[in-house]
Length: 178
Image (cartoon, rainbow, N blue to C red; front, side, top):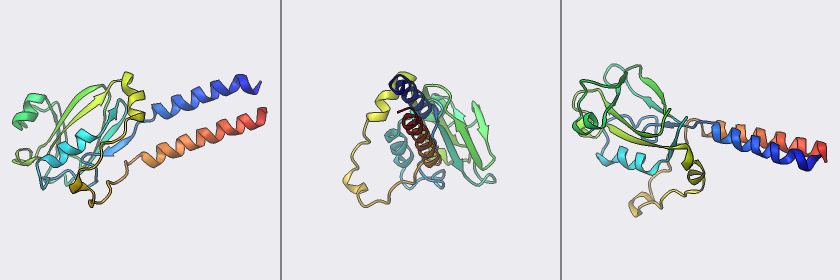
């Protein structure tokens, strides 16, 4: 009986772990949504990341002086703040990446986008889930070796805890039926 239930339990565990969306600070840190020291800072970060449907981006900023605008690719490239798809100005913005494809975000503060406060995100489709799990991150450039480690994802520990709980349940059921 234990051998017939084990595949079912492993399937449930795998499905639950894949369905949990992860949270990321836009730019990698809670204070990343500002004019970067280099215009490439935010684009380098987003280019290294692999986002899946259900993941979320979180921005922390001063709502009196900044905002987050989701815009079209054309408005992203020209830093046009006039016709955003959506505008967020609460200082603690969380956006769920609910579809595959590109997302474009720029600062609503005058002149900030032109100075590099913008981020392009590409969300992978469901068919790429397995690839994401085994694709290693690129090796750091020599200049990054002495840089501080990036902050962990906001929800990373929660996802790990949920997976550990599920693994405990599976192991407990396995032991109970053996």
